[in-house]
Image (cartoon, rainbow, N blue to C red; front, side, top):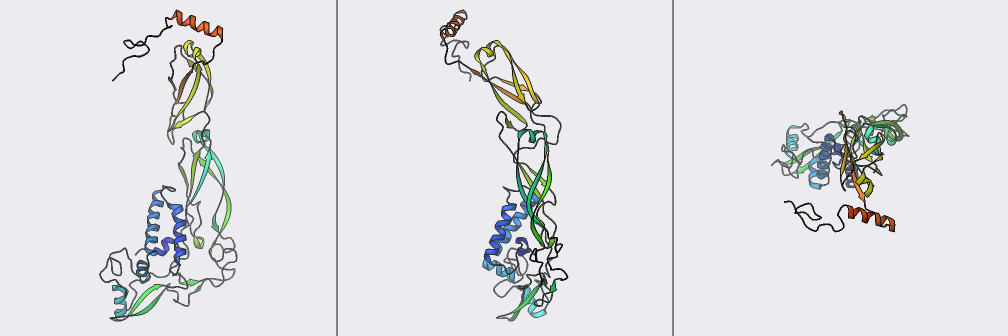
Length: 370
């Protein structure tokens, strides 16, 4: 049977507000939009189901009576024997004793939550990889009590309400007579033990908030939005339980020159009309340093020159993307008298004083291709 209280990390006697706060905290960490890891998505489903059950008074009552409102067995919402008097398991307990809904004491030590941290990187860092030293604040094991949660020289004592069983039985009257139900102990929260003298540093939780530093390696070729998983670097669990994972999301800063599409890079080079007509060589900054870009005579507007293997290295693979240089031809808007005369002479020599309005494809307006 599902442990709905355990899934949310709250005690069986938790208030509605405590349940809501616990769900919101976990949802922020596990939501698929924030954490795409398949394990996190499965955990998010469990947490959401647990909240839906415990936020419904009728379903929560079934859970407190030892049943499962979403199951199909005895005591569940789908069972014909469940109802206000507890369910078939409680009826069997009433006549034959035992604990059909018994779960025993819960462990004080539980798995910690995952954590998410975002870092901003330059294009060169995401392209060729880098290392970052991160400072983060997470839950760590309390060094005073080493995760035990107790003051020095003391230990958890057996709960005198449930006698260490983690659950208590309650007798209810029904038309069948007295019916005995089982639920988590309200004093120890189902743990079977209580901390009479909690640690003064962590107040019995076994963990404290602390700042720590670690180094993360950003692999070459990573894209903006990708996440790096650091196993066991998340939050330590209650009772000094095993830590969750840390996810580092990489955000690539916008580059002033290059636009990235996958592993390919794009940039724009503006040329004067004369350079495009005559051809030239222009300096071009790339990720590997400055190179000379050859412009062929008669280069047309919007032409694209592709430099192979000048883009971003492929992630966890050999090879690189390409660099696509888009050429933009700049037509002068202001000419002095001498420049205007020279252009008119050129137009006269080329027979372009009056460009043909229509033609068979060679004039100013050609037939539109279908």
